[in-house]
Amino acid sequence: MTKHALLIGSGSCLPDRVVTNDELAVRLDTSDEWIRTRTGITRRHMAGPDDTAASMAARAAQAALDYAGLVADDIDAIFLATATPDQAFPATAVRVQALLGMTRGFGFDISAACSGFIFALATADAYIRSGMIRKALVIGSEVYSRILDWSDRGTCVLFGDGAGAVVLSASDEDDGRGLLATHLHSDGTLGDLLYVDGAVGQPDKTGHLVMSGRDVFRHAVSKLSSAVDEALAARGLAYADVDWLVPHQANIRIIEGVGKKLGLPPERVVVTVDRHANTSAASIPLALDEAVRDGRIRKGDLVLLEALGGGLTWGSALVRM
Ligand code: COA
Image 1: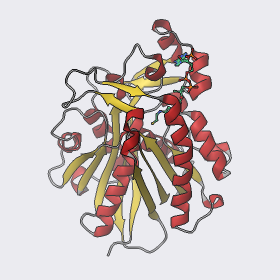
Image 2: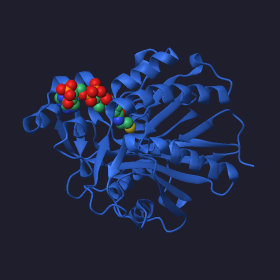
Image 3: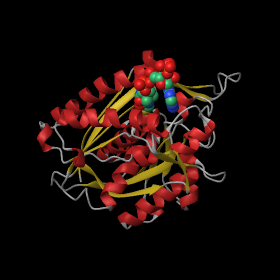
């Protein structure tokens, strides 16, 4: 029986276009000061006309494969988290499979909004630990700019576009490295706090993201606190054992709240929300990739990932790099 899924590579894709808070303030009743002080966001990347969840995911995945020293046909499965798929079907994951030139294996999409990457990681981990596959691409890719109501200042300033990917590989070594724990939760009774208004079952609706910001904030603080406790308790670890927190990047106040709870100094919390805004399922792999590539996160470090999103969904993952 395989013991662990090792995280052996990561990659990112951010669209070229950068939109600052000041640019938004030209056409909206908002200000750089309001957005920065409430959320920590200063700018975000925005997809160009040719960028899609699949195209950005493929670029992030190729970067992760290159980092891991693998080619696409080394991969057995693609688990792709997105709330903004290119099409209802085929799954964005199989579009990515084609873009990578991958001639074998399988792929499917996972829908858990901003928690999507944690859900995809947990799924890939289970497939690897069961022995069903040995190598997986786990991707989060989003184009929220296409589901935002650009006249709603309460939501459109909060999100950005991008994709991040990691490669997981089965390891039979018992060296303590790899994915140590994953925990997933959802509560469908809270579905109306954050949702997209319209799809196949609601053809007369706008297709725009709708959010009760204050309620989501309140749930995020309490549910993410219990998610980090649950992750550490599963392995008998303490706050002091955590080297890095790589949280979902929704709001700097939520991120700092969890960091403080863990007793982590701010420099041990990876933050990208200032430059990327909330890229939903892409935010954790984007942040992780940045900190791996700039040398902050190193082999052997204990990294705690957590996220909350529409559903509500929430969860955590603990990784020894
Ligand atoms: N610019 C200026 N003013 C704005 C604004 C903007 N972009 N957006 C909202 N406001 C105004 C509101 O209209 C309101 O004005 P009023 O008091 O005159 O009615 C005021 O600011 C306060 O709005 P409110 O929504 O209560 O602000 P808040 O302090 O709760 O902050 C969020 C709003 C969205 C930043 C905050 O609730 C939040 O971060 N929630 C969590 C969101 C989240 O993480 N979502 C993703 C989860 S994956």
